[in-house]
Length: 150
Image 1 (cartoon, rainbow, N blue to C red):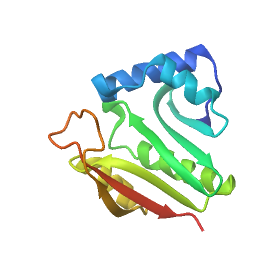
Image 2 (image 1 turned 180 degrees about the vertical axis):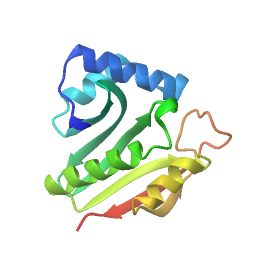
Image 3 (image 1 turned 30 degrees about the vertical axis):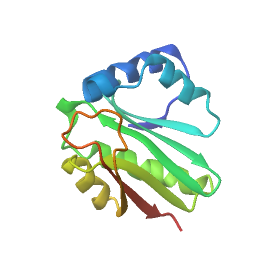
Image 4 (image 1 turned 120 degrees about the vertical axis):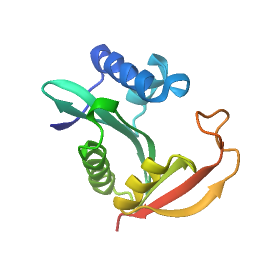
Protein backbone atom coordinates (compact mmCIF):
# COMPACT_ATOMS: atom_id res chain seq x y z
CA UNK A 1 0.00 0.00 0.00
CA UNK A 2 1.27 3.47 -0.92
CA UNK A 3 0.50 6.50 1.18
CA UNK A 4 1.65 10.04 1.79
CA UNK A 5 3.62 10.00 5.02
CA UNK A 6 2.71 12.27 7.90
CA UNK A 7 5.27 13.84 10.18
CA UNK A 8 5.70 11.82 13.32
CA UNK A 9 8.78 10.41 14.97
CA UNK A 10 7.88 6.79 14.13
CA UNK A 11 7.92 7.68 10.43
CA UNK A 12 11.15 9.64 10.85
CA UNK A 13 12.90 6.72 12.57
CA UNK A 14 11.48 4.17 10.10
CA UNK A 15 12.81 6.27 7.22
CA UNK A 16 16.17 6.69 8.96
CA UNK A 17 16.41 2.90 9.22
CA UNK A 18 15.68 2.52 5.49
CA UNK A 19 18.23 5.24 4.71
CA UNK A 20 20.92 3.50 6.78
CA UNK A 21 20.36 0.14 5.10
CA UNK A 22 20.12 1.57 1.58
CA UNK A 23 22.68 4.36 1.65
CA UNK A 24 25.04 3.62 4.59
CA UNK A 25 27.48 6.53 4.97
CA UNK A 26 25.47 8.62 2.51
CA UNK A 27 22.22 8.18 4.45
CA UNK A 28 20.09 11.12 5.50
CA UNK A 29 20.10 11.70 9.23
CA UNK A 30 17.06 11.97 11.49
CA UNK A 31 17.50 15.75 11.33
CA UNK A 32 17.65 15.70 7.51
CA UNK A 33 14.42 13.71 7.44
CA UNK A 34 12.72 15.98 9.95
CA UNK A 35 13.74 18.92 7.78
CA UNK A 36 12.08 17.37 4.75
CA UNK A 37 8.86 16.85 6.68
CA UNK A 38 8.99 20.50 7.76
CA UNK A 39 9.61 21.77 4.20
CA UNK A 40 6.27 22.89 2.79
CA UNK A 41 7.34 21.78 -0.71
CA UNK A 42 8.53 18.29 0.28
CA UNK A 43 6.39 15.19 0.06
CA UNK A 44 7.42 11.81 1.42
CA UNK A 45 5.57 8.82 0.04
CA UNK A 46 5.86 5.42 1.70
CA UNK A 47 5.24 1.87 0.54
CA UNK A 48 3.92 -0.53 3.17
CA UNK A 49 3.92 -4.30 2.98
CA UNK A 50 2.20 -6.12 5.84
CA UNK A 51 2.09 -2.86 7.85
CA UNK A 52 5.87 -2.44 7.51
CA UNK A 53 7.38 0.59 5.76
CA UNK A 54 9.69 -1.02 3.20
CA UNK A 55 10.38 1.84 0.80
CA UNK A 56 9.84 5.51 0.20
CA UNK A 57 10.47 8.42 -2.09
CA UNK A 58 10.91 12.10 -1.34
CA UNK A 59 10.12 14.83 -3.85
CA UNK A 60 10.20 18.60 -3.62
CA UNK A 61 7.41 20.01 -5.77
CA UNK A 62 8.02 23.74 -6.24
CA UNK A 63 6.15 25.73 -8.82
CA UNK A 64 6.76 24.18 -12.25
CA UNK A 65 9.52 21.74 -11.23
CA UNK A 66 9.63 18.62 -9.10
CA UNK A 67 13.02 17.51 -7.75
CA UNK A 68 13.36 13.87 -6.73
CA UNK A 69 15.44 13.72 -3.57
CA UNK A 70 15.48 10.03 -2.73
CA UNK A 71 14.05 6.70 -3.77
CA UNK A 72 14.83 3.79 -1.45
CA UNK A 73 13.55 0.24 -1.03
CA UNK A 74 14.90 -2.24 1.49
CA UNK A 75 17.07 -4.84 -0.29
CA UNK A 76 14.84 -7.82 0.54
CA UNK A 77 11.86 -6.08 -1.11
CA UNK A 78 13.60 -5.05 -4.33
CA UNK A 79 12.79 -6.40 -7.80
CA UNK A 80 9.07 -6.48 -6.93
CA UNK A 81 8.05 -3.24 -8.66
CA UNK A 82 7.88 -1.22 -5.44
CA UNK A 83 10.27 1.54 -6.55
CA UNK A 84 8.42 1.85 -9.87
CA UNK A 85 5.10 2.24 -8.03
CA UNK A 86 6.61 4.85 -5.71
CA UNK A 87 8.00 6.81 -8.66
CA UNK A 88 4.67 6.65 -10.50
CA UNK A 89 2.85 7.98 -7.42
CA UNK A 90 5.47 10.69 -6.96
CA UNK A 91 5.03 11.74 -10.61
CA UNK A 92 1.25 11.79 -10.23
CA UNK A 93 1.47 13.92 -7.07
CA UNK A 94 3.98 16.29 -8.68
CA UNK A 95 1.71 16.83 -11.69
CA UNK A 96 -1.24 17.37 -9.33
CA UNK A 97 0.80 20.08 -7.57
CA UNK A 98 1.25 21.85 -10.92
CA UNK A 99 4.75 20.73 -11.80
CA UNK A 100 5.55 20.52 -15.50
CA UNK A 101 8.85 18.66 -15.30
CA UNK A 102 10.49 16.28 -12.87
CA UNK A 103 14.26 16.18 -12.43
CA UNK A 104 16.72 14.01 -10.54
CA UNK A 105 20.40 13.23 -10.22
CA UNK A 106 21.73 9.70 -10.07
CA UNK A 107 25.28 8.39 -9.95
CA UNK A 108 26.46 7.47 -13.44
CA UNK A 109 27.53 4.04 -12.12
CA UNK A 110 24.21 3.25 -10.40
CA UNK A 111 23.00 1.20 -13.37
CA UNK A 112 19.93 -0.37 -11.67
CA UNK A 113 18.60 3.06 -10.69
CA UNK A 114 19.36 4.58 -14.11
CA UNK A 115 17.51 1.73 -15.82
CA UNK A 116 14.56 2.08 -13.43
CA UNK A 117 14.28 5.80 -14.12
CA UNK A 118 14.43 5.15 -17.88
CA UNK A 119 11.59 2.60 -17.51
CA UNK A 120 9.59 5.34 -15.77
CA UNK A 121 10.11 7.72 -18.69
CA UNK A 122 13.10 9.76 -17.54
CA UNK A 123 15.79 10.70 -20.06
CA UNK A 124 19.41 11.65 -19.48
CA UNK A 125 19.70 15.41 -19.95
CA UNK A 126 23.36 15.82 -18.99
CA UNK A 127 26.20 14.94 -16.66
CA UNK A 128 27.25 16.84 -13.56
CA UNK A 129 30.94 16.23 -12.92
CA UNK A 130 31.92 15.62 -9.29
CA UNK A 131 28.32 16.16 -8.19
CA UNK A 132 28.69 13.91 -5.15
CA UNK A 133 31.13 14.95 -2.43
CA UNK A 134 31.63 11.28 -1.65
CA UNK A 135 30.20 8.18 -3.20
CA UNK A 136 29.87 4.46 -2.67
CA UNK A 137 30.61 4.14 -6.40
CA UNK A 138 33.93 4.70 -8.17
CA UNK A 139 32.45 7.76 -9.85
CA UNK A 140 31.31 10.99 -8.21
CA UNK A 141 29.56 12.09 -11.41
CA UNK A 142 25.79 12.25 -11.74
CA UNK A 143 23.43 12.01 -14.64
CA UNK A 144 20.75 14.69 -14.62
CA UNK A 145 17.57 12.99 -15.75
CA UNK A 146 14.28 14.66 -16.57
CA UNK A 147 10.71 13.71 -17.39
CA UNK A 148 7.99 15.98 -18.73
CA UNK A 149 4.76 15.90 -16.73
CA UNK A 150 2.61 17.72 -19.29
